[in-house]
Image 1 (spheres, rainbow over the protein chains, first blue to last red):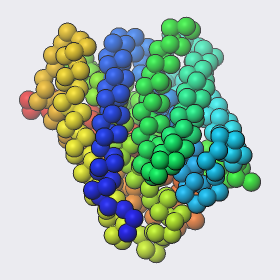
Image 2: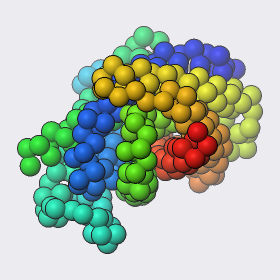
Image 3: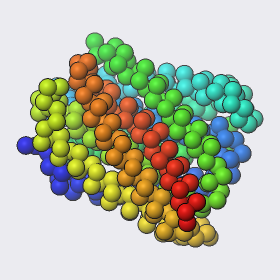
Amino acid sequence: MIYSWKKIVRYGLPLLTLCILIELFAGQILQSGQNTLLKIPIYLISIPVINGVGGNIGSILGARLASGLHVGYINLDIKDKKMHENLITSLLMGIITYTVLAILIYYIASFSRITMGISLIEFVFVLLAVGALLICVVSVVSIFTAFLSFKKGMDPDDFIAPVVTTIGDTMGIIFLFLIIGVA
Amino acid sequence: MFAKELLKQSLPLLILCGLGGLVAGSTLGVMTDLLVDIPGLIVIIPAIIAMRGNISTTLGSRLGSAYHLGVINAENIWNEELKQNVIGSLVLSFLVSITIGILAYVTTIIFFDISPNPVKLIIIVLIAGVVSGAILTMLTIVIIFAVFKRGYDPDNITGPALATFGDIITMLSIFGSAIIVEVIL
């Protein structure tokens, strides 16, 4: 038997506690920006989308790296070719996904008569800018987490998703407020 | 060519998941009155969603590796290895929910000049965390089973699928428990 619930809890709890501490910080940023979000609700609605896609792409990359490391077709090397192919595919998927979703969000929001105050081009630009920044961050974080945990003899599967989504959520919210501020 | 395979298996799902995120976002959009009425509520939302996503995606990710290692497969899915994974996830959900409630209360007092009702916050998090945890653990097993049957690589699919269903189910759980707590207390 390779899994035990006590081990899962013991390994999971410290990291999860750290993660929710960081997420609560993200929550406090939301609290302080609450008025902006209530004024332009299309951004409030976009937050789960931005963070969700960023976290997903980072997690897919991480899960693939973890399996690759477990099975042995990916080596612990920053120059590993398989890892590079995975990285480039992640970036490509991110750009496509954010563009498609930005357009969908905009039209669904205008259908449900949500107050906008911005044009489609502007909104797509904001989401793509936030998305591109976010994917760069989650990809790098994902690779480092996978390699580092594997190198230390721990199961990367226990670490990648929590680390990637936590940093992704916080950075997603920070990037969004940043780009809204600039745009 | 795995890039093509990855795009084919993951991209439609990623977009579908983004739409799921949109449903979660719209729920958040509907909750604006509650957000104003319950100080501290917006603070706990990223934490609960993250806890939920983390616990269920690590579960999915571990089961993915278990599949690659040959420990579980479509014919032999409900075995002791899986049970240990499920129990671990549920225990984590309970413990972390309580922690979120307490920490949200403390940090809100520190950062802002408002003091939320600690009992309210903790109860909202606990109900939302445990209810969404139970639903999502069951859903994880169903998804893993469906993915095995189709012969897809679970790594490309369970993460995004769980994160998305997780977001929707968690947002609805938060919405529901916030309403219940607001009415009762």
